[in-house]
Length: 265
Image 1 (tube, rainbow, N blue to C red):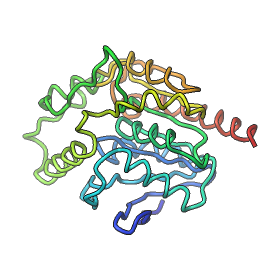
Image 2 (image 1 turned 90 degrees about the horizontal axis):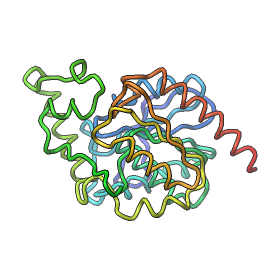
Image 3 (image 1 turned 45 degrees about the vertical axis):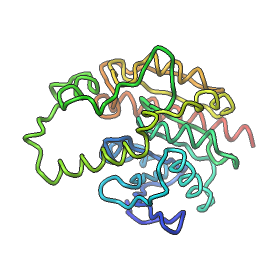
């Protein structure tokens, strides 16, 4: 495993962790930061070349003033993949990272992306299924909405070390800057996903109350080749609550999309 800095734009250094070899897999974290996908990236690195960036502004990294939306982030990651000459890339994204992955696929003009995995992704507007405004929730309320087993994962902010709490608050401020207006979605994205024909697997925790499985079903239906798979006994981060189930499903999708891309050549 190595950590390095890539520079897709002169004022945008990206901190990347890379591990493994084989098919490239870009792993995109959500608002909780890189730790929320670390176990998933480690698993995938056994059979693939994983690239796991820290989104600009998270964990103290630099975010240039012009980077004010998920579309900007998606274009930066597409440029990163193309600058490196990568092909046949599977993009895996959790929550806000899933939104970024969907936006990347919708804007991919070079065909670098050949598969998607969206895990409890935000990013689209689904009638009758509003995205819960997490900025209005206290710590207990956020746990109740995020986890199948909130008692296990809830942390009283009073027990969190000052440095970690400050980092969480800074991450939340960055998330608000990138995805707060309109809240956690692009009104145009759902309609643009029909043009995305690469196989998209949407994994959803059955107990997610931030974006419900019904929201996930509408998201999957919007893709040209989308499929929803609901994970029992999991909430918004099934890769943490039910890692084995998530890993098994992504492994199958990794094999499936590799076969699909080979058939297309």
